[in-house]
Amino acid sequence: MFSGKYCTKCSKKKSLEICLHDIRDFGKGKNKTVDSAPYGGGAGMVISVEPVHKCLLSIESEVGSDNYKKAKVVLMGADGAPYKQKTANNFARIEHLVLICGHYKGIDERILNYIDEKLSIGDYVLTGGELAAMIVVDSVARLLPGVVSDFESVSTDSHYEGLLGASCYTRPEEYDGHRVPKVLLEGNHKLIDEYRFMDSVEKTMKTRPDLYESYEFSKLELKLIKNNKSK
Image (tube, rainbow, N blue to C red; front, side):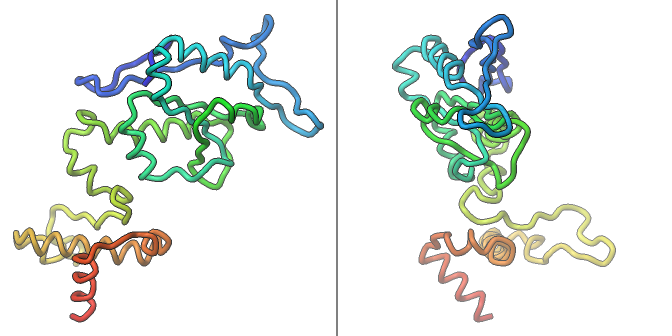
């Protein structure tokens, strides 16, 4: 992440650096004003494009123009494209990521001239974009080497490959009459992988049919599904 006035390094391996930039530092007048009433009337206040743009220019100066050109500038807003695991995977490959937190009624639409994309974490409205930005930071951070010690755990999460993750079990083998599936106790890793895949498929089909319909199954996966349906 970009360096700035408020910085913190995450993990002992310094895999991630998170920095905060206050747009009020670029506001106008004694009160550092960053918002104004909307043109055309109506309720609410709108954040001006100028302080946000000046903040971005400050970041560009700080990291250098060449690095900034490679950066991704993202505005968090309820009217943005849906944030998905695939987006997090792509963000994890970017060295510099700038997240702009929407607020009030929104930011002057002319901010679109200075950003790469607008994202939403869901079909609801928050008081501010800070929580949304934190969700993006957390979901991207866990994909970086050194942040999560067991990366295999990350790579089998729900949504990582497009399907929901398989059900998980641990000790004891039986609780209140409910047993762990027998296949998970027998040590046959091929059968365990097949069981988990089918569990993932069935869970996705039932809970998120939209994900199931959009998932591109390989020929081997389709054969496995067909074989299991015939049993």
